[in-house]
Length: 392
Image (tube, rainbow, N blue to C red):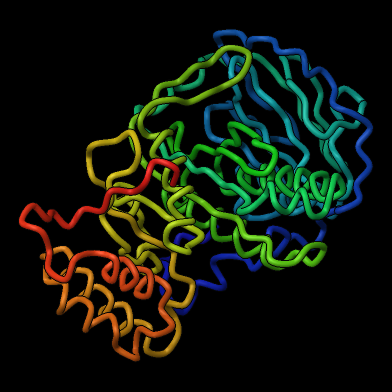
């Protein structure tokens, strides 16, 4: 993956237009015989390594990608190998191999699998190339003290399911499963499949060279997922929402991996906050501060207190129209109104938001609606921090 600085003019090159973009050999109808060996078995303390085709690689916490693409961890030069063919990642007390919808599939001990636990002495074959799983001389590195947590959820999933029935549920489950593959390609770990959504983590361990930072990886994945769902034609108006936060987490690792703590809770709350603002991707200030290439596409939204958390959080939204003519001046006009609002200068904020320049700006109109419901003048104890309702 390229490490060049992300400029606004290169956003479309950097971020694919759909979950399948760039995967010219993605096999939508690949036949999978079954999932082999999904019995949860803890790996040895020494860890595991891959050996074969003149390569040797110790498995760590970051997903290991094998395929033709130069961005893979192990790049394999064969026409029988898909660009992103398979991923191996640590999940709980074991490693898993996952076929990333490759054309020619993955064989584990001569049986084709979609995903499976792997153990020492297993044989993995992809296309015309094979690897042996061996004990590694050293255990994998410890988990990071902090990571990026991302929640994806389909808006109005209950209403859509009632309208379209069981076929819709099966369709969404299949699309979410594909997003698990794409999260791995973006170096994230799918933690929980929520049926109509997904919880992922980025940056659980040391990053591999020449990859994006975990906040940028998470944002790239979120935008790809959101835009890809818009382009699905089987059902109209599918909108994914994403909430992303960076912070300290606690780990529960036995048969599977789980994360918990304030960082997980806040990421979930941010996903819900999209409903309040009419946005699709919301991130915290902590996440934005650590982005390297995606920061030009994050727009300040508001400072809020979310349910169950006293400390205020400044929100930023992914702004897909940041490349449009006049976008910068439009966003600056909103920021000016937002500052006036925070200072308690309600009349001036209302006047600023009523500008024709902001008439089609959903965030500006949202704030203007809020100001119309507030008193004409700010109360004496005004802090500029908005308390979100508990059901948001």
